[in-house]
Image 1: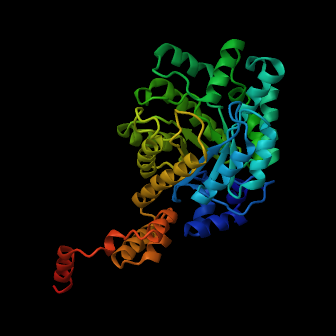
Image 2: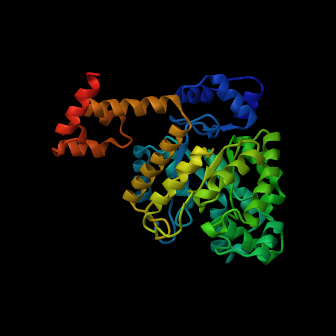
Length: 423
């Protein structure tokens, strides 16, 4: 019995109990959220792991990290280091985006090392193997796609980004209306090229029921991939994006009816004035299922600093309802991230999630904020370290003799403090 089936029959699973404990909410709240589809618990029924998280309505905003091998950098040992660094920095999940080298071996290594949820994008491997084995991605078959999806599920992947909300109607709309950046999704590009060259409908859309059978059999969370997402702020909320959202609406309903856990992937480049509208449209139309965003990047002009632009947009998105933030690193739009980029990406995205959790008035988060403020007022060094999102910075500062600003004597501050204390 999967999570939704258990929830709808009134049963509590071990995973629901763990999520309720972590989130400081009643387990009935979790059960009801899973039953309705407002909460997902990424946990493949074949995978045993220590850390379980819930994603969705009424819970803390979660953070996802990315890694994987490619034809340009096939170093599994480096990816293992990135995984460890990202976990230490506090991410809640990973996605393996491998497109080169030993993709199967990379996935199995990641699953063996990670203690948090793991996701993948099966169309990447199916496309790469079609090129390697058949000479071109256009020779990929429907069976190639679905066999790869089932292989990922059987290996233990907890969630998968599947570009099923893409069809010919959307492509024709994009061709008629035009865009600054056309198709920026890698999976969307693979499938768009395949569809146009073969003049066939997207198998993931056309055979959606086949996909749902696999997802349900392994209790994998279906993340409906944003194949036609805008790749620049100029394209945000254009006709193609909205049409893609409407396709996702129908597929979400079908997934929930089949008892499959589902969330929606959102766009990457979204100006601040579009974030609330983007969030409200998705939540209202897609039955309030969790929203997984790829950013949002609030501006296009900051290569090298997109961890900052993503954190700005991500904080706003979380405030307006996004449940799951995919990290951005300083290497976004520049190249492949190194180990330090990964650490920076996780921490900056955790800060964005934290800001959103404050805006959501999560009680335990507000208490933690208060505790940090009190520690600063009391010049409590250990208290500040305990409540810092990344305590190593504080530890290093205190160890090197740098004084916390709250411990520096300032005559004017002392006078003001005495005045207020004596009133």
